[in-house]
Image (cartoon, rainbow, N blue to C red):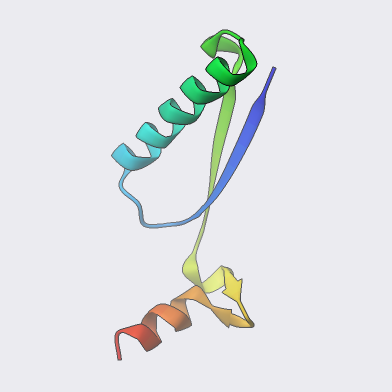
Length: 67
């Protein structure tokens, strides 16, 4: 049973997350020749303040880009 975990920053609309889950399920089922019903997709979302790139949080980076 394939399991895919996707990590995203919070803030995307639920419709996009749902579309991603469906697309990943379909692609995995096709690539591995398994039924879509056995594919598991989980989405983990993090607050921008808890996601760091180069020692700076994404909240800080986003704030700097809007300054």
